[in-house]
Amino acid sequence: MRTKSHKRLVEIAQAKARKLHPRNRHQGCYDFPRLMQADPKLGSYVSVNAHGEEGVDFADPAAVKALNRALLQDHYGIQGWDIPPQNLCPPVPGRADYVHYLADLLAASNHTVIPRGKAIQALDIGTGANCIYPLIGASEYGWHFVASDINAASLANAQTILAANPALARQISLRLQPSPRAIFKGIVRDDEWFDLTLCNPPFHASAGEASAGTQRKWKNLGKLEMKAGLNFGGQDAELWCEGGEEGFIQRMISESAQIATRCFWFTTLVSKSASLPAIYVALKQAGVQEHKTIEMSQGQKQSRLVAWTFLNSVQQAGWRKLRW
Image (cartoon, rainbow, N blue to C red; front, side, top):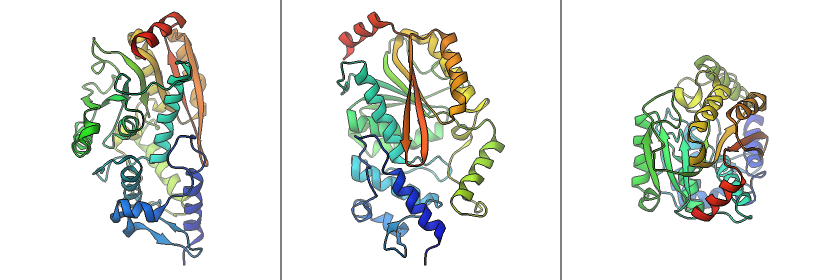
């Protein structure tokens, strides 16, 4: 018989699959029979509770990874997706939401028409071993991506995923960031222009804070303590940095001013609403022409993305005419 905590996990998973962007492919509950047909390996992690509901244990990183692999294969045709055990395992529905809201952001600047195809260039800052945003963005909208990271091993794993998906590999370029303190410098080349940038910044300000956050997740899932050798995935640079989310985004805004006319929309996820006041101050100090905060909701989780541009209305019109 399944515990109340397991039932709660299923309820949380179903809620996350409901409050999504209208174009998100992951509406409603997970169709496990279909997902297991797409990837039979998922079957070893699926169980049925006392109410006859199929689900996986979201406290098991291997189960979450198997679910992600099946979702990517079934909904996007992505083959051979895998990540090392120590790397961050992203929730696919939530990551897809960010991509769709970015498409809306471009559409709002293009007379409500979403710019699609290879002419659209996006930069993913900190793509990680999973390369999830470029994979979904290239699949859904045909955009071209530059995917950067400071970890060579993560990029090597991303390259393995791309090698299994040749069509997508032609749309995604991987670049190593040589400086751990830099964001755009060393990545954006002199002859490049980007229609948008995206980033899921490190959340925590220290390793200790990251560990405490993991413990809270385990308790929220009905576990008394974190199991030895298991966590929710994520290496240091994926989970924490000096200044945490707020400090990282402030540095990003400062650097973005150095390439002000080389990108239409700079964007980042912001997990903590408490980070917003300092971000708005940084945007004002950087002299942006316009900024937007777009709220997102995936079940019980509330997040948002902040977007800013240095282009005035005349420059935006010229950009549309030349690129879109």
